[in-house]
Image (cartoon, rainbow, N blue to C red; front, side, top):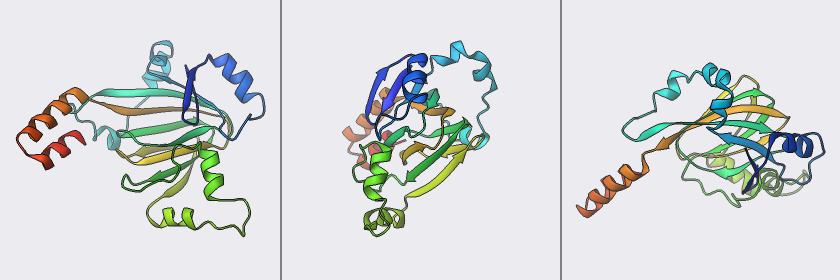
Length: 207
């Protein structure tokens, strides 16, 4: 499995993660969480079989643009999370724990988005109640939203929406996202661009 700390990742076994990052106090503001993309499905077939994709999410799957769902198995330590990032349509089902989410529209510029989520939050929302929070409030006014995800909650993130998380407790989750037919999409977009159909080309590659 892979561990993720801020924008860094490395291979790590589960026992090492649990002993170093869950049993012990956090080593920094960028606490580590563990994830496995797709490989877990063979070793945990009973979990894979129990996953039911809700219709509201499945409706966005387009076989002409997507090859499959890619599914992640996540284990989070208290204070862990992932910095702001974007990708295709995705869902996150929290099986245990509690998680703080930040979600923002794709056209919003997120300052310092590569910072780990705890450091990002502390920078924009200082603990001193008298300190300025104008930049953070400006993001809220332009569409940045926050919510708490509890065990049993399913959260859907639309394509290209910015999102970041902070785990408020030790947790386990399953997430998934579409894997795009990138080569086919690029080929179609290139052909349209060569025909000087630039708006259609941009649309073809942004699906």
